[in-house]
Length: 161
Image 1 (cartoon, rainbow, N blue to C red):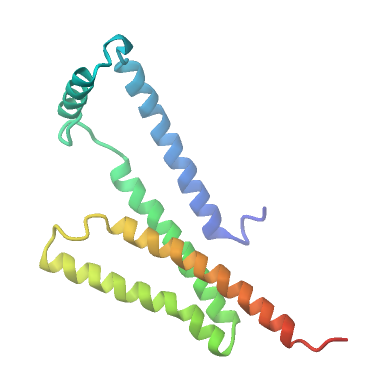
Image 2 (cartoon, one colour):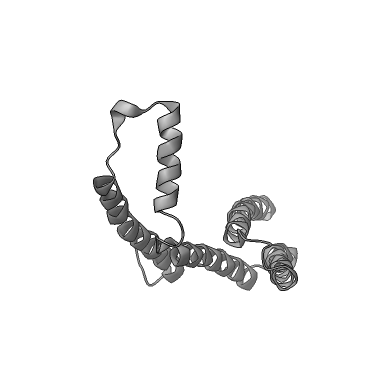
């Protein structure tokens, strides 16, 4: 795969790989340090174990790299989709260009809503990375459908030999 041709895709794959490299040792260490007693898996013991685990691993006691890594990965995916929209706008003409611009307009409006809502009430949109990620996934599907439709219509409009 030519990495210089698709730099954002390569960066996204690198970030995801880095996330697994960071996350996997902490999970293995957690399992090694907190073995599960399989002999006492009654519903009451499971609830007590969950409460004990939650108390031991409260936010004050655990510093997680996921707090920073997940938003970075979400923004990388979002940047890749924005780049794909940009390339479609740059290459396509006419109404196809406007249809490729529509997801960027929606993203801009939605980010404005998130930012303004955060100014009004800081507790709103706590899961904004998931909102942006959902936009990215929806836009990816939209662009694939749009590319397929454009190719189909271009083939139908092409002169036949």
